[in-house]
Image (cartoon, rainbow, N blue to C red; front, side, top):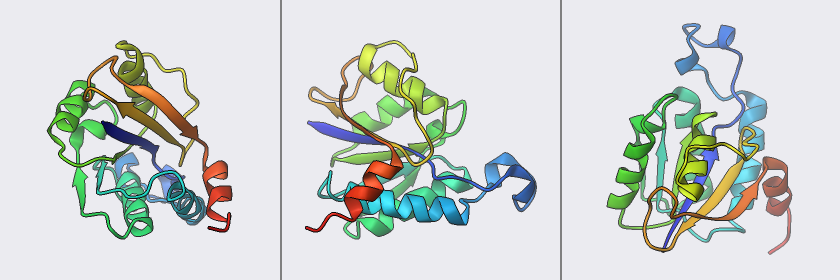
Length: 170
């Protein structure tokens, strides 16, 4: 059974503060980093380990993946996946997941693409019906392997809920 954590990138700086003024180089803001760190620590109360984090090539997604990686020291790999970039190919994400040997896997990307991908995973049709705020995490199970319409929604957490979980004593 494959568990997939779908993660919207953390809050990023405005475009005019990006090093070259381009969307793809926007960095995670200081506030975004704080919120995502708390959320990632709370996520440890939901999933025990996270061996693989795949991310969009955009700077803010790479930085969000690094924050997840730091919260799960046993993470063995991070992979850049072009299909997670804005306008990426959702079918390529399913194909890539089918080749993964160890779950759970995190996918760090962008809206509206993540919302449509989750809708396709659950219903077979690329529809968006979840509010995917920045630093939100959606948990999907694929009992028979990742494919359109084969997913089951097992959790959807805004960053505040995960942040609160990070403060609960173990």
